[in-house]
Amino acid sequence: MSESAVTCLAEFNTLSDFSQWGAKLVEGGDARRLFHGRGQCYAGYEWLTVDYFSPLLWLVLYREPPAQFWGDFCAALRRQYGGAVAGAAVQHRYRRDAELQWLWGEPQTVLQAREDGLKFGLQLGGRQNIGYFMDMQPARQWLRTVAPGRRVLNLFSYSCAFSVAASAAGAEAVVNIDMSKAALRSGRVNHAMNPGAETELHFLGHDIFRSWGKLKKLGPYEVVICDPPSRQAGSFDAAKDYGKLLRRMDSFCAPGAEVLLCLNSPWLGEAFLRDCAAEHWPAGQFCERLAGREDFPERDADAALKVLRYRAPS
Image 1: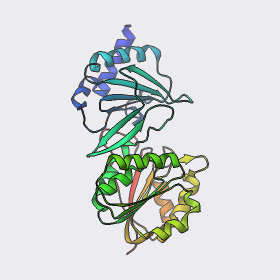
Image 2 (image 1 turned 120 degrees about the horizontal axis):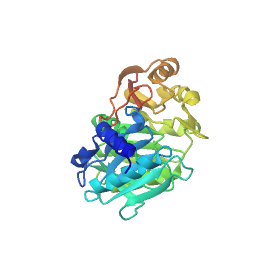
Image 3 (image 1 turned 180 degrees about the horizontal axis):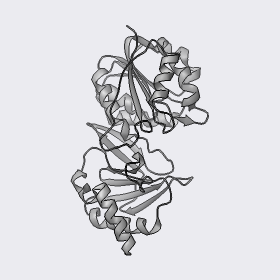
Image 4 (image 1 turned 180 degrees about the vertical axis):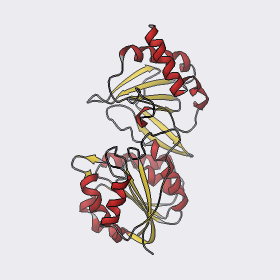
């Protein structure tokens, strides 16, 4: 190992508490982020995130890593944690096919993330998104406090993690809508992994902008979750489309409904979303911005995930 590589590893260890990750690797424990380079708090390592999905480590690269450092880091990772976890996989997200590489362990394509007593399916390989967004855990935790006995609308539901959380809390009904039927199939699987609730569930594989009537017929809703992609061709562009969505909010909401407006775009800050709501849904009352996870440190709050809580008029 070269002297410069030793210096890089020492620097990384100081920044990331690399040698202390073992205390967070609880077998069967909840999903954890061990290193959040994307938050821009660790200069020079913005291209790397490391997650723990028991019993595996999941590393994501957002660009080609420095060859010398990466080789030595992977060797150090295996020396330090090869006996503590069953395997470690790397997603090369910057490549078109999001190539999956196994550093050690038996290759797997199906796994589960655990969160607050719930389980969510993971699909490792062949796609950039693996079916679960850990950074939304605080929002799902909040949802479980307001969902009991209520009708919930889950817009852009993806794999229905919000729906699972609402159902586990005793929601009366959840309406999930997403253009991706494959995502909704994953949502059904997620619900099957978390049985027990008697919530009335709907899975609508439709374009939201062409389904106002159907959504209104199934309402009104006491809780609305709006978690769209920031920019997805043929589906939604936050800069252009969020206002269209907010103009319809009164037609969905029961009096006093709780509403979460979410936006995960580094180029659109909190002010964009609040201004958009003020212009297109002036009746909505801003309440608070939900705090993010402690293991997702962010240098710039405007570039981070925004989750804003609103209340519909009574």
